[in-house]
Image 1 (cartoon, rainbow, N blue to C red):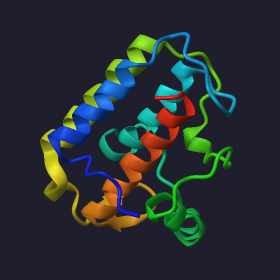
Image 2: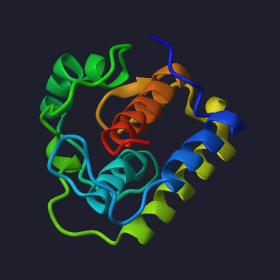
Image 3: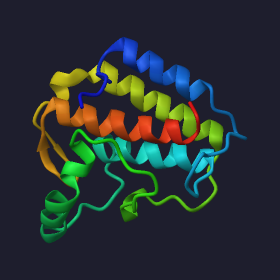
Image 4: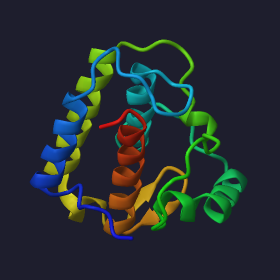
Length: 152
């Protein structure tokens, strides 16, 4: 399955519109996270791409992540509900909905501004070098999954 191109203005605008439909009281259709936690969880994908705030996995961890998780994350199949979450993505503390929403929208804008050529064959935190299509899938599929979780 090909995913909409997050590196286009139209798709980024659509994602912004979906995020704007959320409010601090939005309830999930499944899962344990509240809406603020979900937004913070989605921000981790962008933190891993842009920020140096998460420890880099060891070589052995990267080997196993690439072996067992890479195709789930950048492959064509949508995520199943209630999949186990990688430890770096776990958000259990309460988060400020508005702050996390603004951060996510800023990351979307930054991704659009940098464009797909910036990402083509750029190294990911855990998976090694990814093509622009793999980066697109990584970003779009994860965010779409969680927006669907909250009904938008």
